[in-house]
Length: 460
Image (cartoon, rainbow, N blue to C red; front, side, top):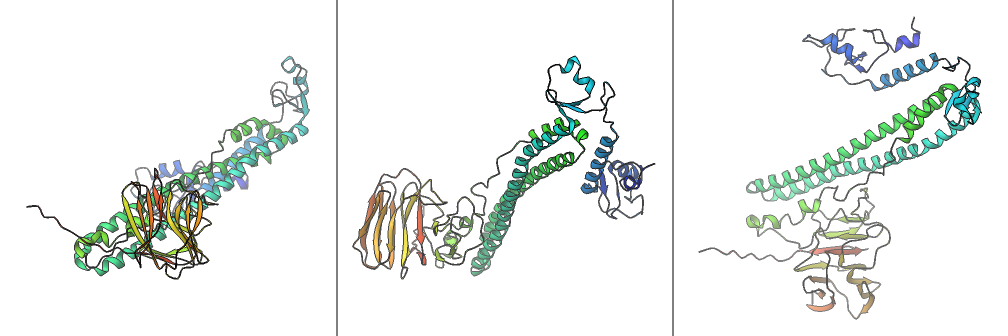
C-alpha cells in the first residue's frame, strides 16, 4: 500500500507516480499520456476529475511536480537497494581505491583485488564527498557567471526596446511637420526601424533563451549532484562514479559576450533625416555632415534628439556595450571615412575644455585611452595640437566656431577659425585606416548644419 507522501505524487487516473505530469487550466495535474488517452477521439477537452474545459490543447509541463516525482523515485530506488555485496552477500565495509567501488571483506582477499588499496567506507565517503564538492564548485561559479551575463543581456534587450520607442517618437515628431505628402517617406522609415528592432530583439531573445537553457541544465546537474551528496555513504558511493562523470562532462563554456552592433542603430534612423527628404522639402531641411553615435557616447554625455549636439549631464542608465566609451567623456561620429574629403563645423563658444579631431580604428574604448588621435585641444585657456607623437602649444586666440577638414586621400587634417576664415593647424599623415570624427568634452559642443545647394541636371 502506498504511503501518504507517495499518494500525493500519484496520478489520479493511472494511480502510479506521475510520469511527465502536465497541469490543466483547472489546476489539476495528470500524466501527459493519461491526458492524451482521456482526450482521444473526444471533441471537448475536459478535465477527467472536475470536467472543466481546458483552454489549451497541449497543456504545459508541471515542472515542479515532475522534479518532485523524479527525486521521489530516485530516493525510493536507492532506499530499497540492499547495502550488500552482490557476489558474497556480505556487508559492504571497505572501498577499493583502485576500482573506485565499495567491497566486502571477502572481496578484499579475492584475486580480483590483489595488491589493491582499501579504505573504510566512512573514510572513503568523506574523502570522495570532499572531492566531488570541489568538482562542483566550478559549475556553481559558472552558473553565477551565467546569471550575471543573462542580467546584462536582459538589460540590453530592455534598452533596445527603449531606444526603439524613443526613436519612433522622434521620427514621428519630424514627419508630423511635413504633413500628408510625406506619409510614404515616414512609413518607409518606420518599417526600417521596426525591422531592425525585430531583428535585434529576436537576436537578444535567442541569446537569452539559449543562456536560460544552459542555466537550467547547470542547475539540474548541480541540484542532482547535491541531492546525491546528501545521501548515505553507501548509496552515495554506489552512485559516485556516475555523479563524477556527470559533473565532469558538463563543459565549462566561456561566458557569452555581447556582440558589437547589438543595439538599435539610432544614427541610421535619425541622422540626416531631414536631408534624406530634401527633394520634397529642401527649403526646410538642414544637413550635418557628421552625426554623433549615441551607442558610443559615454554615459555622462547627453545627446540632442537630432544627434548634432552634446553636453555633460547626469549619468544615464545605458548598457556597457562594446562600442561605448568609459570612463572618458568621449563620443564618435556615426560614420568613419576611408576616402575623399570631409568637412564639419563645430560651435564651441564658451566651452572651457574640449578636444576634437579624428581617431583611427581600432579604437580603445574602455579604460585608458591610447594617444593615437589627431586633433585640437583647448584647456585652461591654452590651445594645443594633439597627435600620436605628442602635443604642442598653439598661438591662437579665442575661437567660437571651428571647421575641421579631412582630406583622407592627400593625408591632410586641417583646422580653421570659421569666424575669421583663418587657418589654425594642419597635420600631414598617410592615412591607411578608417578615421572617425572624435569629440572629448567637458562643456557643450554643437555640430553646425551645412548650407545645402542643389543642382539638377536635366537630360536633353
